[in-house]
Length: 458
Figure 1 (tube, rainbow, N blue to C red):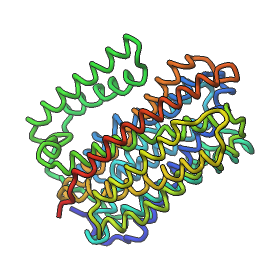
Figure 2 (figure 1 turned 90 degrees about the horizontal axis):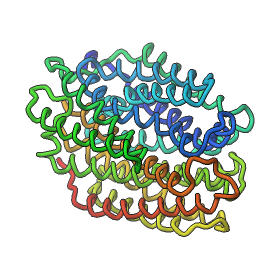
Figure 3 (figure 1 turned 30 degrees about the horizontal axis):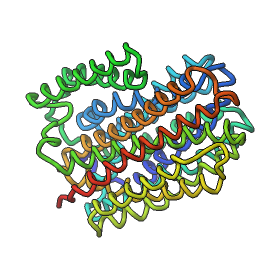
Figure 4 (figure 1 turned 90 degrees about the vertical axis):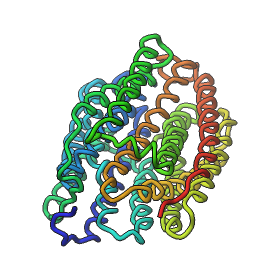
């Protein structure tokens, strides 16, 4: 149900695109600033990775519960207040006095991001007719990738000119401006399940289980990490059993059991993000430590991948309204395999042209995959499940990103340990990067066949 059907669809699309552009932009720009943050707080590569992973952990844990809450209490409210929380947390990051404080503020950022991303896609899809679904999905996905495109260069420039804190301060101001714009101009509200109830039991099982799984996986192979990982898996299995019996489930597990397109496409998204997200993190460290580039110089190279992602995602979204999305998604995943395999062979002497060429192939592949796969997910469910579907694919995205960072962090830990990366251990870091890219390549190979198995629902 939509309360107040009079809604300016152009303004609504503008607001969601704006949020989807600036938040990834300034969030991803942090990767370029990590070496500077490491110097300021005197922390190693593993703890640096938690500045990225803390945001992803909170997002993965809160997306599903907040997506459900948005369905019940209003998606616009959730989106609007999500921007407020995100803005406040960003300002806290900008004034962080220690690495621990920064990581804690990033956790709060993740909660705000979950509030926003669990409802944003559901809102625009609810407001636009089905024949325009691929287009609006493509525009929002492209906005994310355009933000990622500008992130390396802008992040490098801002870090060198004003310091890394400026990234968070600008992000905070922009998020608060989006909050004011939504509050002031968008009066419509989307509530699809007014007679439903919030599943508090499911939330109490899901959130600590997801936290335990994500935290444990990121700390492998220590004994406590194995315990946390297994505890999280057991908890999620128990969560599935509870949800299958619940009258008002937090996450309708029947969608996974009975809807093969929904299940397969979400799994494809999980694999894609797990196999590609940490590429920027690893290459940012490689370019600055192994190739001795400045943050802005590294940013100019890293911009290649997200720029192609943004350009291709815009057109692949429109194409997915006319061509079976599974073919586009499968081709995109196959190209990602090629791009990742090229990175497996990097050395300290690898040319910048080779790196850029690899990122071109990878960026084209991810852009070709993302919009059509999202269209598959959203088209496979009824309108009343848009919030659940949006939150679920968001969870797959952030969980995949978390796994991606965890794989990278684990590899760096095995080869370099907790030490800061320098000339004495740079070869060990490069070996860890090559292993990461090989693992990512194999994941995408699985994703190719999984994507081919999906069919778009009418």
